[in-house]
Image (cartoon, rainbow, N blue to C red; front, side, top):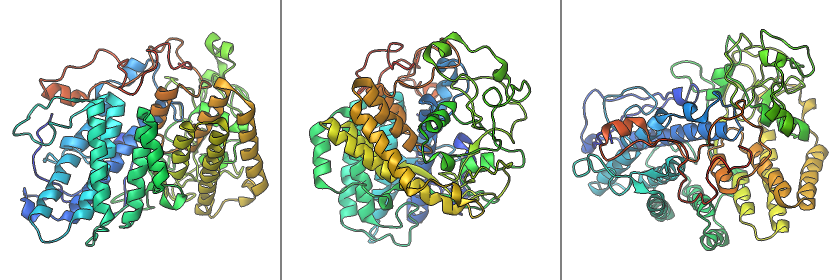
Length: 557
């Protein structure tokens, strides 16, 4: 592990995260001097902890969404797409945080170090910093849980003590999970005392400890679901103190500032530019929502054109070359769309590794949810700077709808599961619809009516109850996927846990290699830690994944 020392960042926060995914930056300022613990400002350390936590969620979301077709994945071969470097930044922010999404800061600071620093300050002060410590423990615990989900192991028992353990041995997943649950218990106990914020900026809940406790218990729910601990899961539900309404949703709010720093939603900044949309959206997700006539589709995606080459417009070799290709047999056999989704939903299929043509003002862009772009009102205009909601969107992390899906997955009967499916859809759609107000220039007559939303939910629940086996599970999982747009860090977990939905489109490449069950160890850690040897492939299963080995599972891959 990179050297973990008890130094810290002094952070000046001017708004939020900016730029896209792994290139997202934060407005961080490092003190020119190495300050001692007694000189530290606990409020600024708390800022650093929160921003590191959000940055980790950003990265987990991106990787999980690519693998589950919620987002578009470039590159044909899984092994080549997800090499050892993909987890470097998350590892660094959790332990050494050499860059913390702000380049090389010259100090080694991570969640472990910053939380330990807060504890030292608290132990040597008459001032109560329990709120700061509780927030830090919560975010550290969630990062540890997801880090374990993504690579199967993590440093825990030997982490944070470089003097004694300069090259810590990684703990098995169950050990890390148990340790993270202990951290959540500690955080909950501190929050229960309703500690003062002492002027600290809480980017999530504005200092409301009761909402933090609901988050802590919600994280326990997702953990007990993944490990199959029904008794512990039901105990948390029975206590009735977890995220159940959109008012308690755990999310990060972005701003509209463009420069110094850019506080806009990363995907907005990437798409609403002088050169048009920067990335591609997932054909599978757009087509799934289009076919289902999902009422969220106009909020999620903004179409710049009304027809797509190869679907309802002539093929176009320059801007969408695959519209001229012969459809591969593995797409024909499954009845999947290979290249072009109709009605102007211009994206790309999983694993398409074609180059990037000058199609920035043709392909579909992020909409008003969650990136605060434009609401799709059939205007079919080119996107540009400042349009829509100006980027003042959110990063969904743990939403009430997600919790309902976890409860539904643990339900004892199809009827109970159906009611939780209904509740999750109601919460998701209602939340999404509020974002239309961010686009003041949109023609709101294109919003779905209350009757249309009700009919959609009722039809989905009815179809679920009428179905059996895989068909029933697919309906449930597809709705979970749709609800996770913009915050899909838990999707890959669900997919490996259950194998659903089985309706995902195949990869562009007929044989993309075994579907990843975990990622490589962070290459930076492998290079510096003699106790760690890099894996040979992506087939290692995390401790709670008891399904058949790849490539037999999941079925859709």
